Length: 241
Ligand SMILES: O=C(O)c1cc(=O)[nH]c(=O)n1[C@@H]1O[C@H](COP(=O)(O)O)[C@@H](O)[C@H]1O
Image 1: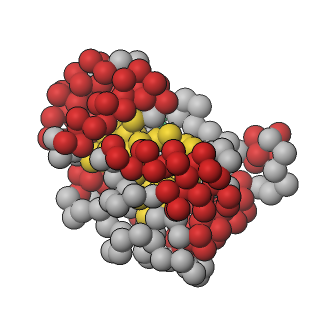
Image 2 (image 1 turned 90 degrees about the vertical axis):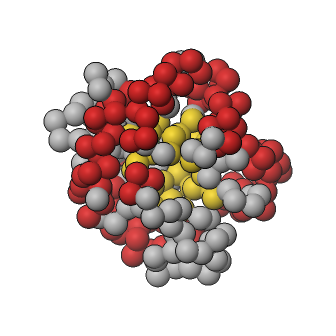
Image 3 (image 1 turned 90 degrees about the horizontal axis):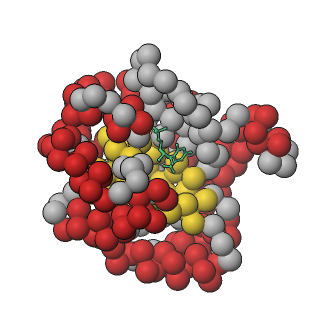
């Protein structure tokens, strides 16, 4: 197990509420549409992710409002730039009241994010995107298959003191062996049985992900595109129990 640097706040568990294991990706074009979805889901979900699509359309102010209402927020900015820019960007984002913030798992970027991390904000490092398979990694110039690249980046993240990893649930068990019990494992690429994979290539069901040792799953289209998003969220939380 690798673990030279401590994560920020131990224990890593964000809360004992089982609903917190589900993070709903608010990948919607506007704040009113996001607010309408949150209203429809009601108390079935407690944790929301805001990424590029909504973030660049007023979503950062929404993040602050939702956090002030007591909802947990995952700011999915996937930062990657020169160290100074990442450090100061993370410092600015630390004021938004979010629980999680993503950066890409490059050592220079991760070190900078740890330097800029403010109180209460946990940094998650995105290992290898769940839309990548081995051929995509080779096309991008990486000399390692996805599983090995994820393992290498997970070990580096733990060494640097990153709070958690984003990977596919298909790698969760091996990542857990590498990073130990004190770091979070957060997995997108989650599909309830029978749901469309879309552009995701490394997918797992919520129940199998939980058995693999994940802390949180991220689910977007299976909920945002559902006729009854509240029912789908409730079914996922039940599957994660
Ligand atoms: O960092 C992320 O959240 C992320 C990392 C990754 O490797 N794969 C991935 O799908 N995501 C995000 O997780 C969400 C998955 O959405 P769905 O595929 O619609 O469930 C999207 O908002 C992605 O941006």
